[in-house]
Image 1 (cartoon, rainbow over the protein chains, first blue to last red):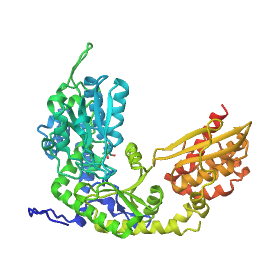
Image 2: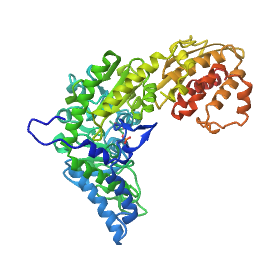
Image 3: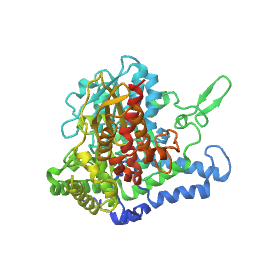
Image 4: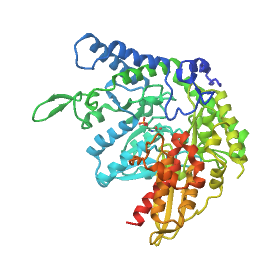
Length: 422
Length: 158
Ligand SMILES: Cc1ncc(COP(=O)(O)O)c(C=O)c1O
């Protein structure tokens, strides 16, 4: 573990963190589990699991409705979680924090509500070549419906955004939607620079921060973005809860997305008056337990400290890049930036000619969980010239021993597929 | 490594490394059907030439893991030269072998007589894929080519 030059304490005890995650205690195929798929979903600490159970055991009631004691407790726990998340992402106001089902729904909310209110034939959206399907398909749907043009910002050979023609590509664009961190290449994008370029061109920007908020200190004011989407289950929180943050004046001007209860101030036979922010965008009974659970996840991460999380992952990713490349040499390709400082802890691996699906099967026999496939980024896979990769991704509970076990298992997989009589 | 041998039988690895009937056929006269495994990104094209009621040529292109590729390779050798009806029986027998507890994973109705069909039709080398059933996520890999062939047969004989 490296210490930053300013001497801030960024160490934390990985073993103690690991002990907070009950699932990491289990065995898989007679081996202690080695969980290296946190880019898909993170494991959950005891604090979050207990928070969910305590909600149902002690304060389960619908929110914003009943005037009785437990309904008030449930409502205030929900709004406390919102405020905690607001502070965690540096948002000016809790009313800008809108709960959705996941990041996908958050992006769809913008595409449906803002997109359909503002974009028409002749308008253009810029996305990048490294987007997850969640930040592609909603725009394609909009494009198909409205005749909006979609432009793709290309990548450099080492998997970073190629900014050479950014200003020309932004010309005439209404929205620039990009990831803060790639779920395939690990690439961290220069969010502030991209936001500034978008604004200089008169465009708004939307940041898909699904792979950033769990791993880095996040501050929407410092990023100066207009919308940001992220998802709870990748940051120690439950599934079924995500967040859209947006600048209040934009959200205020947008029409509601889904209609129903919660999102109205008044309904008559003639029509309805939408509720104020954030409830205007939260139709129906919200996922109360999940919201409170996400609040607990944020507390858990805050206790470790996001600077420490990032320092830990940078060090571990650096170790993984060195150790895997040294040992496996030309047998191994790790896609994306080569310097750990430019990337998150996501390693997309191709090992000899072993198909990623076969690779992950062999690793599974050792209890090692990695993801094989296209990682919901098929246009990017096409660009990389591969159908699939095996992806190992690290988080706060991983340490060098996990990387070493992965490395051993890669060698074993190579053996297995080369020594079988053909 | 215990367990893996159940999945990766020698014959499977052989078909993976030396795929039979690999390549593309000219369309037309051949018919092309395309299949995707959304889970892992595997893609397959099955080229099929039907003369009268007989499959006179078949070939495979695309990319995928050892299970999907070897299954496709073995499939071509199993159906080449057969009539369309016979090929459909082989498809049914293979899918029956790939179904756990009688549940047909691709959603089509499970025909209890499949088991009998399975015993009438000799699956030969394809028996080597039986072990895939113990690894449920891989069943879709093994059946990808077969579902694509099934679709291709319907289209080619429509
Ligand atoms: C970069 C990125 N964007 C969006 C998503 C979508 O997250 P969710 O499926 O929770 O909506 C993911 C996760 O799979 C992701 O990695």
